[in-house]
Length: 293
Image (cartoon, rainbow, N blue to C red):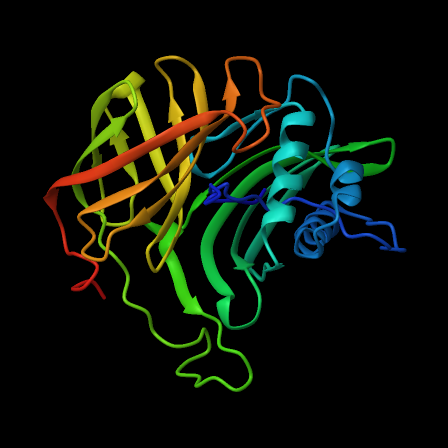
């Protein structure tokens, strides 16, 4: 469970919630204890307890935000390690948790806030992802392990519950998340120009939507000032990756780069290693950066 955006990333990733906490001396005794340990551990950014309390079956399938699919353990481990490298710190308060048990199997429904901090000092930014989680655990050799899970946003367009830079001690604080920031409205139709092709994209105000090349889908995981990041997926040629753009002052266009994280069965592609550059130009607009709130 997570991430995300990588993000959002992606974006995104986004982000996921299941990781381990190092140095937990007391072994968990039930499925609810296991889930709370995983969530608390995720905030500590320790992969070891995740490995201990998640099943490693090769055919296990789980789903995260943005439609991301994980089969087996290695792919998910790589994405979690990338998320931990990306964020400065994480906070993951559980809002609600219900667990049901029958014999050696348990299932759960959970709501939580996944709060990512990126950067340090006056440049630190905070992003809130309100998530809901469902999944299944099994008791194996006396220990409960997570075998499958699915997560999604609790509210429409939740990926952009984002704040301004978190103020430093000497800054002026206007609220619990720092001063208010004007957010861009990314809704409308965009023309996307790559080096060798162009295509159309239609996004909602939060930067999520579809594009015409290879049945593509885009998920925005971070929008901070003029910085725009996220993930993309193409079902037409079975590929996915991330992107990073810089919006113009008036929000009418954006320039940046994209990269692969998976091509077919090859899912060990390092982010930003293979990709290209592109330009986004808005052809029918929502609010511009200057008017958005």
